[in-house]
Amino acid sequence: MTIAEQIYALVKSLPQDQANEVLTFAEFIHAKHLKDDPMDWSELVYSLAGAWGEDFPALEAIRAESGQDTLRESL
Image 1 (tube, rainbow, N blue to C red):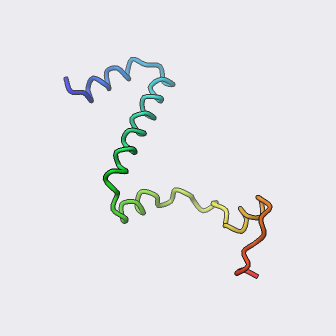
Image 2: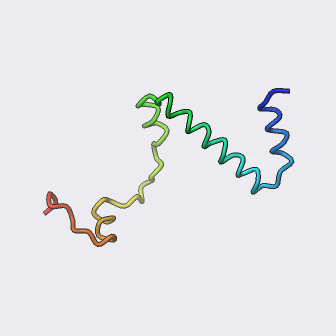
């Protein structure tokens, strides 16, 4: 039995919240090792496409909510 199969068998027996912890940990380990092997720029852009959606606030709205002044360039 491979390691992936062993992990799968173990995770199948766990309650949903504990299985989610295992998934989160596996994603952490995966991301940690990706830092050593940088992602191609086009892959990064593709992976983030649509992540913020259309309702992502503009920088001015974020600054206004935080009490910061608007950008001088916009005046």
